[in-house]
Image (cartoon, rainbow, N blue to C red; front, side):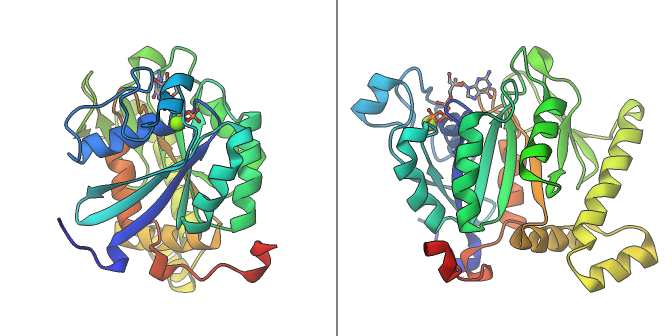
Amino acid sequence: MNSFDAKHIKNVALLGSHGAGKTTLAETMLFEAGLITRRGRVEDGNTVSDHTDLEHQRGGSVYAACMHTEWRNFKINIIDTPGLDDLVGETIPALRVADTCLLLLNAHHGVEVGTDLVWEQMQRFDRPVLIGINQLDHANADFDTTLAQAQDHFGPAVTVMQYPVEQGEGFHRIIDLLKMTMYVFKDAGGKPEKQPIPASEKERADALHKVLVEKAAENDETLMEHYFEKGELDEDEMRLGLKLGMMKRTVFPVFCLSALRNMGSGRLMGFIDNVAPSAVEMPPFPARRWT
Ligand SMILES: Nc1nc2c(ncn2[C@@H]2O[C@H](COP(=O)(O)OP(=O)(O)OP(=O)(O)O)[C@@H](O)[C@H]2O)c(=O)[nH]1
Ligand SMILES: [Mg+2]
């Protein structure tokens, strides 16, 4: 078994309303990293996370479950939480130990009552937030509406890191605004091919990239100076700015996912490795959050 120092361990809680796809995403993260060789399905009662008889009977998570995956020399500890609000007692301890909260939204339901309820709990703990818009392969997926609802409910920190070129059954391409590249997936998902951003998407991608660079620069004076001098930040500077933004909660980066079709989880894990803060980088919990 590999050993990791504290900087190379990321503790992530998966949060979101019932059915957003948290357990399916956890399974996909384990599969992509090669920790399991077969992806289970919630309906079949054979996922790593939903492993109790009660969860099999109910067809969904009841308990918070701890797992880990390994992605490019980092260990990512994952706590998959149940989304039903009467099971919130399982969510709170996960929030207490997580260094990053990954809030999953369902692209065809948008921000749900259950999302707002879990958000209330997240606010009590002041942790960095990543947002995953999942189920982009669903026939009724609507990325723009889901994003607008997230910005409305959670504020201007919600920042697009990726957007889908198409959605619904044809979903297979994601534009990444940090790397300024397009990920193209095969039907079975998995590792995407990187392609240049097509001319038809260039204007939108450039405009959203500029917003992202400004959001990253805002968090540090030196980065701001570099941005004013060069009109751009390089990838490492962006990562630093985004990490600081996550820690100050001025940036909640938004990622695109289809957990079911295994699209997008590799890039998300890479970002968790390189940008999401580790426990040693996070300040201790403020005492007031315990009341
Ligand atoms: N089309 C589509 N369906 C998905 C996706 N992710 C999950 N699902 C389906 O959505 C349903 C709920 O998925 P879960 O992974 O159990 O969702 P959850 O967030 O863990 O739900 P709770 O544990 O009850 O909070 C299952 O039928 C999944 O197969 C996705 O990316 N696309
Ligand atoms: Mg679940």
